[in-house]
Length: 508
Image (cartoon, rainbow, N blue to C red; front, side, top):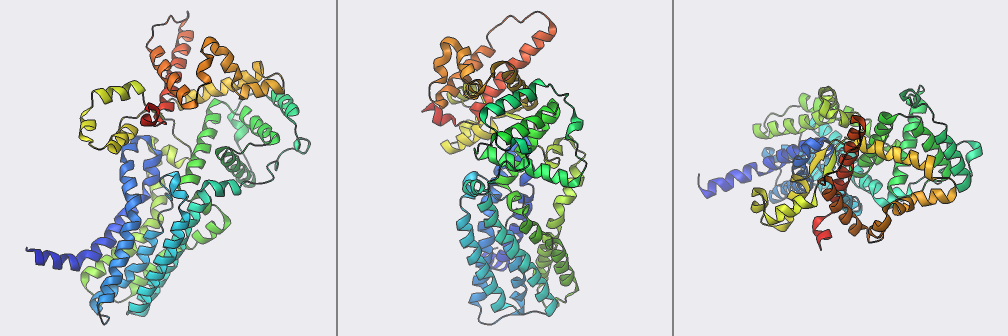
C-alpha cells in the first residue's frame, strides 16, 4: 500500500478512529477511582494521568475534524450524514467522568477555563448538528436526547471543579458551627471546654462499637452530613468552636480503636471524593435532581436508535454509531455492576466500603541517595530529570499496612495528654503547641526550632540511624513486642514524611 492509499484510508477512517478512541479513553477514566485509591495499582496511575490529559484533547480534535469534513462539502451527502449523530456523544466525553474531576489540586483552580471550553464546544456542536443534520425523525430524537445528557454532564464539569477549589470550600463553610450542640454548651469558653473535655476523658466510657449504630435513617443522614462538614472544616484549616470539639471528642471516646480508625478512614475518603471527584456537586439537591433522569434518557436514546431505519448509510458508520450509543448506555450502569462484581474481593473492599486503605507510603533518604550514587536499571533508562523524579515518587515508594497501628498510638497519646499533661487552659495550649515534646527532647530541643523542612529532614535521618542501632529490650516478651512495634511505627511515620516531601527541594 502506497502513501497515497494510506492517506485515502486515513481520510476515510480518521473520524471513526477518533470517536472510538474517545470512547475507549472514557472507559479508562471509569476505573480511575479504583486505581487511585488502591495502593496495589499505584503504578497504573500514569495510565490514568495520560487518559485524563488526553481525553479532552481527543474529543475536541474529533469534534473539529467532524466540523471540517462537513464544512468542505458543498451539499449534504448520505455517506456522511450519520456522522452528525456522533456529536452529542463527544459532548458527553468532554463532560468527563463522575469518578474524576481533577487529577491534582491545581486542576480545580482552572474551572473558569472549563466554563469557556463548555460554552465554545457546545456552540460548535449545536452548529454542526443543526446545519448538517439530515435523517429520519427517530434518529433525530435519539440524538436530541443524548444532546441533553451531553450538555448536562459538560456543565457539571466546571461546577464540580469550582466546588472543589479551596476558596469555594472556604466560602461554603457553615456560619453556625454550633448547630447540633447542646443548649448549655452553645457558648463555651476555653476554660469550660477544658474542664468538660477532661471530665469526658476521665469518665472512661466503655468503648463499644454498638454506640455508633444509628436506628433512624434521618439520624444517619444528619450524622453523615455532620462528619462531612467537620472533615471539610479541618481540611481547610478552619478552627472548630469548642462546642463542636467537645461533641466530636465525646463521639470518638465512645468508639473502640477499630471503629475510631474506621471513622478516620471514612473522613479521608470524603476529602478525596470532595477534591478529586464530583462528590461535592453531585451530592447537592441540584446535582441529585440533574442526575436522576440521565439513565432513563440514555436507555430511551438506545431504544430509539434500535427502532430507526438506517438503510442507505455506510455499514461502518452504522456499526460505529451503535458502538457509541450502546457504549454510552453501558457506562451509566457499569459502576453499579462493578460494585457487586468486586465486592467479595478483599483488595477492593476499601473502595466500595467508603473507607480509605491502611497502607502508608514509605521512602527512605538513604535509599534515595544510594540510587543517586549507584543508579538502578530504571534510573539509568530515565534520561530526563523529571522522569527520574517520577520514578522516585511512584516506582520506588513502598507501602506498609501500619495505618491502624499508628492511629492507635496517636489516639493513646491524645488520651494520655488529657489525663496527665492537660490540667487547665494553659496546659491545653502547651500540649497543642508541642511544648511538652520540646521539654522531653532536652539538649536536642534545638532541632524543633529550625525551619520545618529542616526539622523533618533531621529527624528522618536520626530515626533511620537509630532503627539499626542495637538496643537492649526490656524483660518480658510482651514489653519487647510493644517496643518493637513502636520502633516500627516510628520508622514508618518517618519514612512517610519523607515520601510526601520532594527530595530535590530538601536537597537544595
